[in-house]
Length: 292
Image (tube, rainbow, N blue to C red; front, side, top):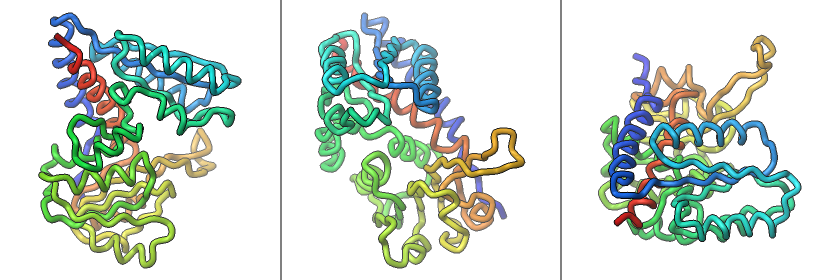
């Protein structure tokens, strides 16, 4: 029997509806949550993503500010813009869209953002808070979206074997940290490209999270029957028969793995929509802290 599909679009819609209610409450108290997104250059994927973020903010009743800077922007100019947003009381969340041009250091820019406004959850202060279980920190939006998906589908985590394939600061590492928090209580194995017998580790997983950035990397023989499979990856795969010349594929061989797993996220429509929803949720939390 084919696995149950985990509908990230529906869950994201529910989160955004919750956020909109929270925003309306804050607006009634005189505070309109504000999110500023800084876009340096004209990367096509980033441009689309930033536009979607702005639309989602407006639909939730938030103030959306998009600051576009040329690809020639210097590190100093970008840091000065971040400083201005840090000082702006009408801005509660700051996001600098990646990737940045080569002359700009992403690490330095992330460290310059006020941790209280770092709604992307990448500042070292928020990374540390996540690791120690401090609820005042912000978790990165994609792994936070995975946790929301698991909760809404009542996927049991207490004592579960969780395998995360990928060790990035954006998904893999924070995913593992979220899974071991009290109340979640999973046992986590983090795998990566150098892991010995990666397939053997994956087959033990009750919950398998794929975030390695390789199209269809996880095959059916790597999945425990009945497991919950979360596919975070989105990859372009050449397909001459497609109008665009490519198709989107996850890190999981979806068609084959669906016949083995108990639950699975599709691509698109799985985790992706939740990233923006959790960004809005973090911005609402940031604004709530300064509301009267």
